[in-house]
Image (cartoon, rainbow, N blue to C red; front, side, top):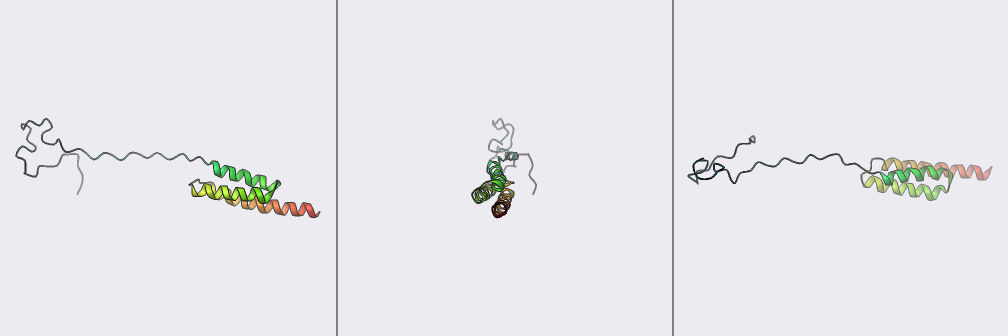
Length: 112
């Protein structure tokens, strides 16, 4: 069954249904209205604040307090990912890598 913009035909219950001379200015189709079109959904602009903060923490974790900033970046990345930010997963991965590199760098510098 296909939908058409024409009003539905009368069911025979009203003798004036569809009759242009019945006094109804709409020709008996006063109760009929076309289905409203669905609104066009525009792409949602995602602010990736948590993901960007996680990436910043990943960079800082390489040089300063890798465990603190690395964990903060991982948490920010995971929370950003659960909120639908596309970079959230990558921020968590980068923060984990930054934490490992920062920890290894601090061990190498402390033992030398």
